[in-house]
Image (cartoon, rainbow, N blue to C red; front, side):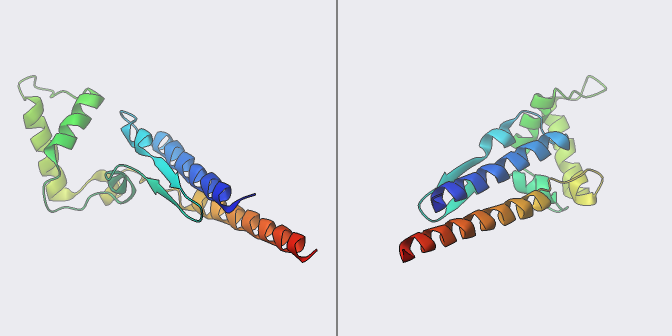
Length: 146
């Protein structure tokens, strides 16, 4: 098997692990995170790309600066969240969420919600990848020695 194909299978496995973990942990609202995951493979390397906010799903966001209001507005609209009092606008609600995050961090950061974590799956996939590549290398070496 060519190294390029092995890299592609490895990255596809990691991508699928992320997608499954997003669903399993209830971190999926619109599907944009999953849809943003894509791979790029060339002859000897590959890259897995995703939306920049996936980092926040893995690590949370610590208190400090206000997060981007536009992203929170999109999240509120996607989730269909509305203020309980019926008077607070969507923009005001987004500001309240952003202020809470700026003051306390996200629930993932504080450990109240589970973070996106595929480390164990990646270790397993890397072991399988290493075994495949080594097996192919040995087979190719034996063939060249004949």
